Picture (tube, helix red, strand yellow):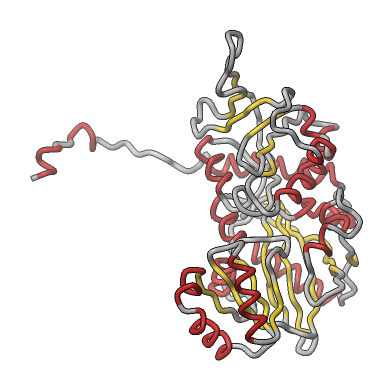
Length: 381
């Protein structure tokens, strides 16, 4: 499943094409694509990247599909049949592999639907997905668990619209310039701006408000080193990948750096990076340990990428954010460990079934006689 109503829609499509390629040799893959308008389709042609370059929702080869919250129905093909011979059909699927980035997919919404349908699925659950998608919630979770984060300030779009000057005053009292302004609910560096003064701060906030109703502001570290590390596992056990150092031309790692560096069809794989990161073995171990701790704290599952910022002056490590569905599923970070892309997706499917088995240990009902003994008139009195 991929696409959906998100500013990271195209990134999701690229990741999905990679995942389909990794799976196709050993598995029967059914693509379920959600358009930017929220329409759901399936078709063999949706496994080809070329389809999306001139996508036509009226294409007769596309079939409507819906995932229902009904445990008995689950996934239905052609849910609104047309014509005398048209009829709906249940799709027999073993496991769902979400490949969403951003809102309406990576944020716990699809995961909630899959939980209701009692479908096994790859990756983080509802709670971890929701926390990982929200930078403010991530900060609060990390701080509560004693993990290192940069100080931050957050506010709502409604508060900004009500009294922007008061918000600016609070920010400037808390932090010196320069500052980083981020939409709380987005990835892929979309909407993130650096501000060197009051005017740039106001402009950056106005930009961020287009993408989220909650905004976060952090101090900017001039002498910074960005390091990323992926984690694979579940609540019981985790393993960390090698570390990478993303290469950026500007003050911030941008959408351009990540996805449009002449490698539009390769997603995060096409970005410039140093693997393994040119850092000491001791620092690598610290980052890997912190990545696994963060993964456990948020009740992670499947694969996640934890992004770090290091103050090169003090060598202080800060956890920047957690990506519960990293671009290209971060397979390029696992290959140096001896886990190739095919083995990685198979491992993720195994973890999905393992998580599903763990859920079956939980009771969802009790032997209650409440309804038999209920007296509505008595309750009303």
